[in-house]
Length: 381
Image 1 (spheres, rainbow, N blue to C red):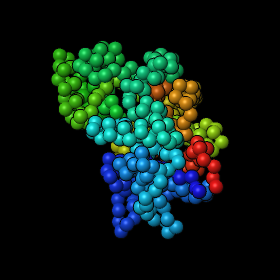
Image 2: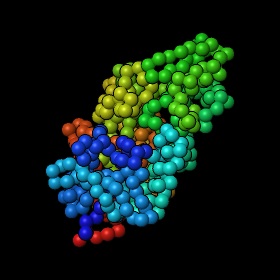
Image 3: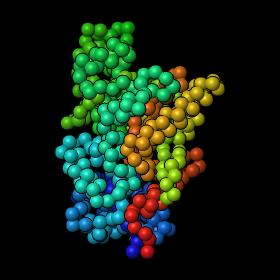
């Protein structure tokens, strides 16, 4: 009997039915191409992929409703036994609705007690919560000095904003449970007072009106029902006026080896303070981010080295403290001196892209399937 890999779909995770149906077929939007690559890789390994909504899992009964790619290349709905291993493509722990978030997390915890995951629950729970990420990074020795750093991060309050403004001169307000760049605002001190930035707009406030500046920032940016954090803003080395970040994507293959699938940058849309591709940013090769340092060979080499130094340090600690993983991304920012600020740990990274002539989605799919078979606990028959 084939090993079945259950893919928990992130695109419509809160609905009882996954995907969009058209004449009995499902379409998974931007994830569809990657899911097809997963299905092809599984078929080549004599396994099977089923795309499933968490709301259509009956964990105790060992049953699920899901979609399997048929021989005609169409996603068909089927009743299934509970898959042998799961690959979480949701962002349940980051859902903006606290009630939905709690429900999804309860389903995932119950499922994790019965089946292995490519991206295990402790890692997913860490990555969803920016305060926990900061505590984890601070706990492994990262701080405000050195080649690899972490931005100071506090639970949101007016006092916390004031404290970090006094220390650093500018701060960022973010949802605690990240929303892929939604709801992020910046406040910086100017000669005249304070400037609030959100998306491509800005507002100015006099020196005695920090409280009003903070209130305005929250009014224009806040995600309803979401907790917020305040974080030290980094003086980022920009590229043609665009805000970049860097992502290093790690995979574990069917032999259990960890390798770097890709290291690349994301350039934010012009005028925006976030770099997320979902908010209009672009994925670019790492060298394009290093263009922020121009022709300075020393700074380019320092920055590149610090990216891998920091990302490898984080991944080593993840394995030591949280155990084995199949896929994870380490995100960060480079300041104008080439120091690397680790900013996020992403347990559900988007991998369905092509970059530098490489089909990262295809490579990732083969390695995910290989690792899933390795941890499934079953031998192929």
